[in-house]
Image (tube, rainbow, N blue to C red; front, side):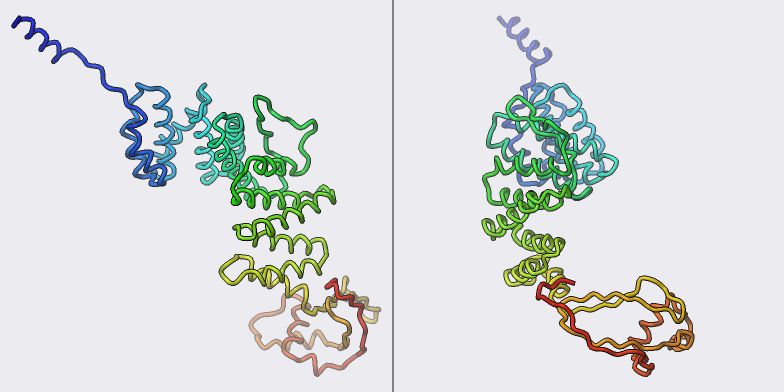
Length: 389
């Protein structure tokens, strides 16, 4: 018996034992830090499990979360390894959740670090991730991910290429991909993206942002379709009326004014700008000062005279006049000796860059008042109260 006990002890001491595989519970501390966006601390916690491959699925999760944490923590020491890990997940044959998450993470990294050289990659990664979540059976999580990724893709495109863009892949519905029967025209695919968000969005924050994006996409569609222009106005009003306390209501109010101004409907533009000024105070919107400036340009009196060509002496001079909010004016024409004016500049150290500068100097200094008048007349100007020049 003693020999048997001794043998058992030797076996226990020297034979290899099977290490206990880690489980999802072991990641709870790291996951908590990750959820709190304490990415530097989360990176350190996930690092403890990086070399454990006993559970292949869990190892993929750890590889993603560690890499994503490292990039979001701006850790230069581990950046290259993190990027490689994400690329390996993307290039792998398993298209699971962590494949989709890796696409989004790498898109965010290069979208910030190298948006122009990696533009096509970024769009493809986000398109792939959108498509994967659109086919996920985890409805609540899929809704959140799909909406966030769609906004990420839309922001990436509109920030770098503007609102007139058609380069967005149609998403998957169920097991099939919906492909337009004809190539996307203008920015129709951007419109579809926001429409798809609205189909699944539940929160007012997501809905208001999507309605605003849809309004901008309609507004920036230059196909000439008047129905789209009307839709833009309707969408702006939806944001302003149905989501008036959202972060996008003031943006919608400002862009509605810009829309009318661009279409030369200055009365409605002024109304929109006045409503924004009435609704928001300083510090409540970034558009307040710009709105005041635009409104002043529309409602304040303005008159300008210009000529389209240079004329030789003794020829008849033709000029054009534009005005806004002016019913009448007194016009006076003065004779000017340009050679004499060239010597009238107080600052003798520098010359004039153009004849316009010479004349502007005579007006601003008041010297024009001493010049002989060639013609003076009162004129009546057509003014219908529409702020049209």
